[in-house]
Image 1 (cartoon, rainbow, N blue to C red):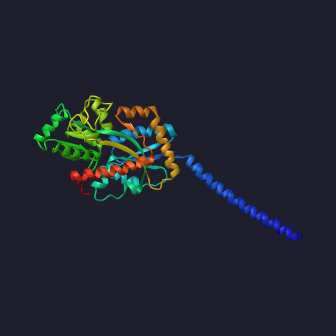
Image 2 (cartoon, rainbow, N blue to C red):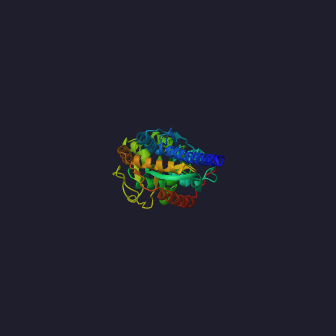
Image 3 (spheres, rainbow, N blue to C red):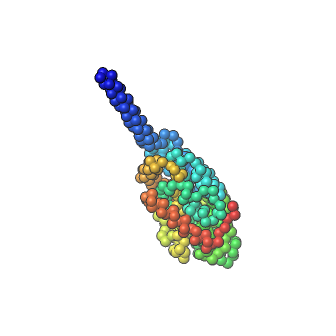
Length: 338
């Protein structure tokens, strides 16, 4: 009887120990997962910027990075990877570890790329998770004032029509928004301007300032300080209304081009497979950053709007933009060999 009782107690003890062990293991696992999410980031986060320093993407990536450090207490490292109209950096970002420590700041260029590049070793919709719209600015037509002396866009267009090929325009690379904006402008004005591609908007802008090229269709963000400094001249801002940061620059509608509504925008993506908890925390950081006075001031200075879209809205916008630019590429017969 005693032996039977002892065996029963021993069995109950072993069962209790197994159950307790399982509960502790589950609890530890759950705690580890929660702690990992709540403590993110525990080390520097990398943001791939697919253009050289000094371009439009950099104009917004740098202050975004600085504010991230203030709100999170952690470092957001900018990794500039220029080349191939922004597709080289996108390819690098697509192949980065989906561990919550790698993000990608792309934009208009990357919704154009699928239509102009015959082969890309990444897929924007398959390999990335769209997170947030960070900034949007209208395109602006800027010229070197020593090479293009016209006071108005209308006068320039008249000269372009009378002298096909007389002028050239720079871009951030084949298939970039600068390139497609130029092609759209040529279609709508029935003019001929020679395209000169660069490895990014930064080098293109510097060559415009130096007088090595005549024109640039640029996002207002990267051109703003140079327009204010008198190094380049803005003849027109895209869209149907003037930009508050540059009230003296006429809009496209005023210049007789009501359909020239080109916006350069910049968004945040994560590699496919990035933990959902980290995605949400990054989105929380994005909201905090957008509410900061320093960011509001920086965006306003460059004539930009901070994104106000939800994650699903941004994802829908990306799909819509891919389709929109595919039509422009077809109409302009843009082809890139690579």
